[in-house]
Image 1 (tube, rainbow, N blue to C red):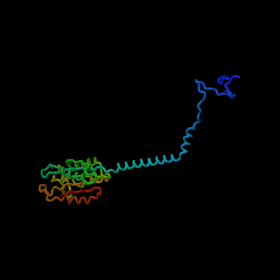
Image 2: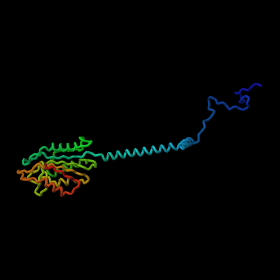
Image 3: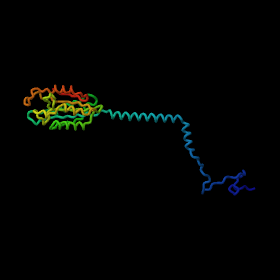
Image 4: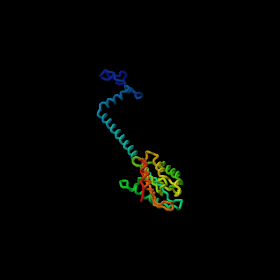
Length: 263
């Protein structure tokens, strides 16, 4: 009996008697890819993650530590920015020349102000010489006490308090100081009449202007004791320093400190 062709119509394997599976043609696919049920892959990933509990806990610990460190760095930066000392503004006003011949010129005022600022900037410490004051140095040109106070008011409005707590302002004034008939210390402006006290700037009015803002601490430096006597103006003895001391004692203002130069 002749053997059957395995590719024949019977499709049986020789010697086995069992039908062979149909062969796939080159024009079509004989089998379809097995379809996965929805969620099979995700369930497999979740089971794989559950099989490694140690790695999951370690990741959460690292994430928590990184979050705490980042928050700490941000907090330190904010504290550094808020608490970093800024330069203290120094408003320097001086009256050099007077319109009347009865008063001598107020000499060396610019040089004295520069020397005062240099001493502040050259104080010891790691920031020596870098400067810790922002200076506004100008001639006090107020023609009247009201105009002079208005000029000072504008400078104080533009000044930004500095220091560690950002609440300090320095004011330096150089002018001739005298005392009126009420024993009040006063400053002679460029257009003041030494024979008319109404043209003088009363220091009580200056004090009131300086402590308008209760949240700012002001250091007032006065260099106003350059006239001991002036007979042309009827000034036999200038007790400006004594009257200023009495005024400071009566002024109950803790945010205003007065430093008077009497040399």
